[in-house]
Length: 380
Image (cartoon, rainbow, N blue to C red):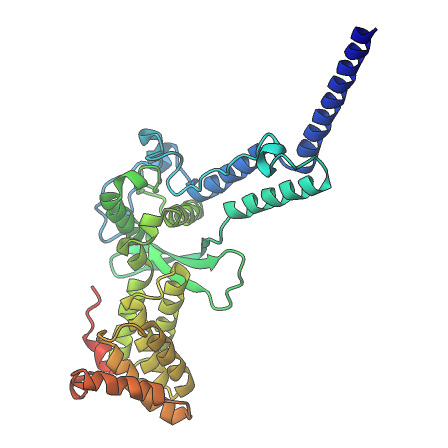
């Protein structure tokens, strides 16, 4: 009799445990996506960043006959196929896959946790945090137009690219205009320096003919968008001088020439675009950015836009707050004091800092003005 009762008790306990396990599994499967969905989302993000158009058949034998600096090595449309497409675990710059959700909520949240609404909410919150961490704010590159330009002895396509921050509305977009040879030069320089990271990045070959057809221009536009997106997804490349100068060095040179020749309105627009480009690329603390602010101050001042010039001076002085030996500090302080007096703003802090520089032995009488700094600054 005792043995029969013990057998029934064991059978009842076993059935209750099985029901609890089924309930627990049902909650996790129904209320929380599987970890494989997170990994699939990561794969989708990597594909969007790294996929590049490849051309097949006769379209791959490209040569830009209209380019003046035509040379350059021919690179296959899909280097990833020859190099395995990888130099590290996964694609270069690809975010690591999320840690899969624990198969057992008890192990994740401790022995006191039980299947139920609280545990479901905790799992859903963990899933939401994992998904949001997979898709950070990133920079998008969009070819908005392409025009055929004919010069004396050459003909080429000029591509206009907008730099757009995902999830934000840019009222004043940052834009560049580049031709095929500019992209090819960037590609060649980056492959020489970042051979491993560049192995999986495709670049459209040159063409011998049909360079100006709508089909070719459309394919190249898409290829250039994905080429820049893939480059920007790799931290070492997006911080490199080669990558950054591709975007704003031409604007800085043009703005400098326009400022030196007194074409301040045209120069102001070019300085402003260089400002937006550096802002989108996240290099607002560099020497080139300070030079851009100096150009904006000079042009605004020459166009009698004193409030805007004063604001640019204040931004520059905030960046120079801990740099007492920077060559642009004295000129910015002097310009800020003059502009603050003109617009009726407080200038005592700048006067005190300028006095401190003078007491430290800085010869303020020999300091050039911001305009003189712009003229003398070499932009190589």
